[in-house]
Image (tube, rainbow, N blue to C red):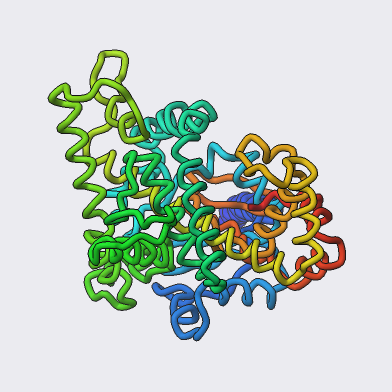
Length: 445
């Protein structure tokens, strides 16, 4: 009787341990075959890798690039607070994220900068995926950023191009041979975007006689330009409050205070112009769309209702200003610098313009497709001097597998641009010439 009982117990234990062993082996096999997260440094509890980032004396993007170089990897997973950040320095991997799986990585993170600058995440660049995201993605490509819209306003761009040519000519004939290229290009870009949006050179008190972009500015308008560049400086600048929201009230890194101070200065004239234009359309004092602002105000849905309210229009116009003021002026400065450092390249570009356009004609936008060498120089400059260390961050809306790595939901993807301007790429540019650099076919920018 006793032996039968023990035999029964032994059989039950064997069955139990067999089941446990089978489940364990299955789990281990599943884990072994499952793609892993990208490699990364070991994080601290709660804070992640924020202590290393803060204690590092260099900017955050340099710390990230140095960390990836030490790990010898083109993709990494760095936990900052409770957020996983995945920087990518490989163009091939960047294409997998932003092209092949664009539907998963199209969303944007909700962060302190976006809330402050875009009136609560209302614009296309800062929107997380949702109804507002769908609306803005549908409106902008078809009504504002389309090829038709771009061809609609060439006169306004040509007008500012004529102004800057007259200004440079005036400086030369008066033997003022030292020209502040940064200041000239910044005010030129400001006048172009203001002319396209508001049909006026908003930043100027009056135009000087030679028509140049350096106008006699009112003090508050000059502050407006500085404030816009201040906002650009803190665009996704790895603020501690973005990764540890419970510390936002303490203003530890000072980013929030600086942005809140610059924002009302940057938007003062913009908001005033938009309110006045909305009032004009509302009272029937205008019936022809003449610029981008008119288009935004008069957008209607199938029921005849306005698609954008005043708050959305103001936020979107500021986003246009942020994009237009800095990027073209920065690219122009570095292109001229590289060409001045290599006179043979400058001479070849001049010869191409003389041969294709003619020495007595101004270059027009329609001429650019024929200027292959000039375009190659511009592309080479973009790759040697990217406009920012990282593109705007993207957020995954679901779990996915990219390459050999498992990417979890709500992770932030940072596509590196700065890394492409490495010394290796620069040496290839010098040895091959800028046309060769343009033919490298990088897709990361």
